[in-house]
Figure 1: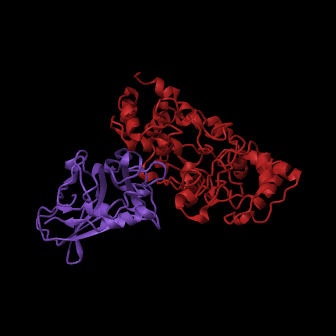
Figure 2 (figure 1 turned 45 degrees about the horizontal axis):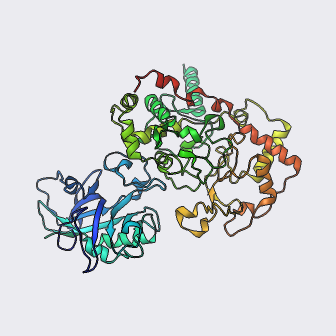
Figure 3 (figure 1 turned 180 degrees about the horizontal axis):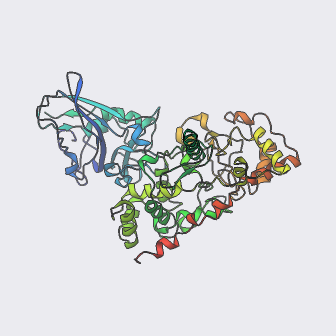
Length: 199
Length: 345
């Protein structure tokens, strides 16, 4: 989402305020460790739960789970990013394959969240911004745990608002965050708070 | 009867303790060595996977303009280091910033690269493939190129039962070949197996090694795998602060991974930037060249004192770490036979 509109990559232009313009080229992130909870206890845990969400491929944005038909849940929990154990487990296939463009080559580790685009606010070359957020080691472990209260619905929509996210980002002076560091941790912590159930 | 049973049990025990062997003999843990760090259960070795990894290791298809292979900077006859190059060169003769290390006994490594930036052997190949001064490629495009090749259709199918290459399979296969690069047949090793003896000079060198070098270059791997500042003055052009770049911790400034001493005779030039051409220069550094700084290794705070004769003895010991069987093992060389047996592209 961006404000009240559903995000479109590439040509759509968004505004944080009246004078700026923002376009998005890439939005990819990992959702992992999906769990359904009821009465403060897990009722269903997805095995081998790693999903790469890619805004350029709407199929990846919908997840279906084979859960018991009588399952009752009141809370959905998941992680934004890849846990530290998986980060040190060597080559893995599927959504975790390094060819998916979500693995740092020069320093081992998954990129948890990738957002790229351009804005007239950025002073960088071609006014581009790149946020490759990740990091699995202390003190820059950027993995986010997200818990959302919901009712026992069959279809749940979860949203997060990039407008809120970018409003807190210094696009002018820090248009690039691309390694595990303090900035990546701060931005990841902000992102983690933005996931909401879409009513 | 009882007596016979006892004997057979004894023999079995000797077999097990002498060599812990993978079921098929593709990987052996040398006598009295620690358990490898690599988790073989997630990538069990097979002959076909090792062959695929070996073909990839020697194939410049991994580089952007198909000119540089892993073996370009890691030649077998120098224990898979880059002979006579302080800093290695990649595509278009671009020069990197560090000396290509030896590739031996990698199954025991906990981290990779001089600064430990790589956390797993499987992920190591991604770095040189994508570095603009090395192979300058992307893993995505390597996979694309491999999937155009009949040879690799065949090799991937043999190895993984799937002719379509994936990043996971490519990386696991290269790991498999690298895991087989075990060097444990030097004179030093045969001495440990009580199959040979040191000369007087080597014996004295071994004593000097144990007094002065062993706390970092620890037996039997001849590295403790830690990151240390060994007192080299900073190269003002390269400005390489080593481990600190990875951890962003000032306490790691100027620290680099302690390299193995095995096959040191062939892995010159020495140090992370290849600044020393020979072992005499290395020993001169440790005896008279140490630059003191906050992060200097504790072991080097007191100067190492070696006479001219002691230096000669120490070097004679270091030469006992050369493993000719490893350097000339045909299983590790260019995979001519594997490639000849396949249909051409």
